[in-house]
Length: 125
Image 1 (cartoon, rainbow, N blue to C red):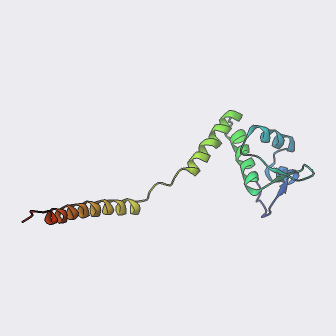
Image 2: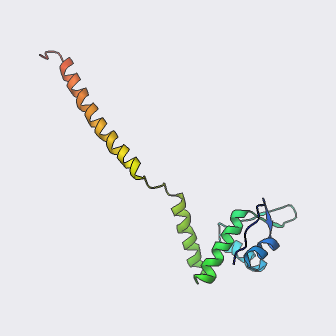
Image 3: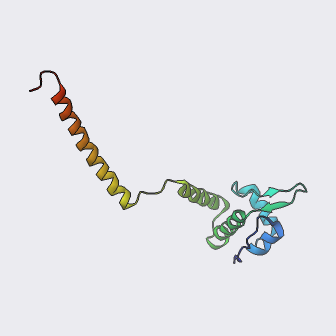
């Protein structure tokens, strides 16, 4: 079970192990398997996880151990979730109404413009 993640800039691998219950050797292995999990390393080579990395570890743990997905299945699920998050949001009903009103207004303005152009044409009555 994931503990509440304290509000810090970086977490060391031992802290992530404690927070998520995932052993350090598994965390290091997951880094090689999941492209999204790339903690920074300091000058001494120690891994420094950010909060989003810790949340990702918890998500991977859920996919692997609770939903029983293989590594490939977990990778595909994470990729699909990332695509959904980056997709443009669906327009809400209000935007749809505004769009329809703008289309009607454009049609009316184009009709008015053609009437005005016809009245200005040489030889117009």
